[in-house]
Amino acid sequence: MTHKDDETRSYYETGDVDAFYDAVWGGEDIHVGVYSHPHEAIADASHRTVEHVADKAADLLGPHASVLDLGSGYGGSARALAERFGCRVVALDLSEDHNRRHRTANARRGLDGLIEVVTGSLMDLPYEAERFDVVWSLEVLCHVEDRQAALAEAVRVLKPGGALVFSDIMVAEETPAEAVRPAFSRLGVRAPATPSFYLTRLSELGLTGIDFEDRTADVGTHYARLEEEVHRRADELRDVISPAYVDELLTNLPLWTEMARQDLLRWGVFHARRPAD
Image 1 (cartoon, one colour):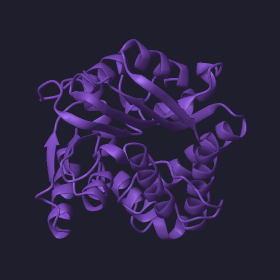
Image 2: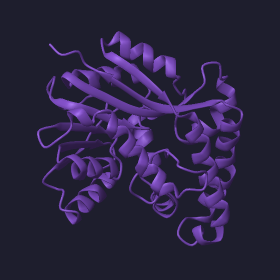
Image 3: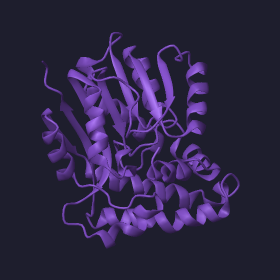
Image 4: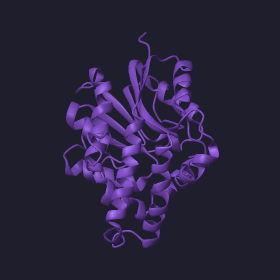
């Protein structure tokens, strides 16, 4: 584990963070949502993201397929993939607290035979080369300091003909670092990536069919919805989350909605294939 891994784990392994994700985000799919309308429930939009990303690799998925979910969190993606396609999923996450919760939910849903939950780091995957049909990650690479190395590890374990699909919260190409530092630093993110960074790295790694679906409008909707929900339910949330954490959210979330309004952020889905031998 790297020092950066420790920072990321310490951010997510707090009762306040878990309670916030449960109360406001639904506690299943902790991702930026793909919204059908501006006032949609956050949990519904977040689950739609999982379904939307899965569609990009659906031709490779089925009972025969193996998927590596990098930064699997509470396990929403892994369960959705296993239920929809019957595929086997290896779900890797830094947090053993999250992984215990993940395993319990899998057993409750009868999916523990399809999903293996592993505690580990994106930077040193404990798997042989060319093992997985699909490597998957949603909003995790922003927490990684050496994203180029993490992508190289993801490609290493991808079978020839396999798909790499991921999303990330990024900044626009010309966004000055100081304009986004206050918001990103709370997440432990020192220097967010840009879409061109990922597109260049994927090409350098020899992937083909490289595509970026820019869904930046959704990130603006998503943070507006989070801010709206926290304001509307602030008194209720103070009963399940520490008041100090609620106050922190009320200060931090408007930074994100303002960055989105100023067109400083980027969000979307990357999809690429490893050439078949």
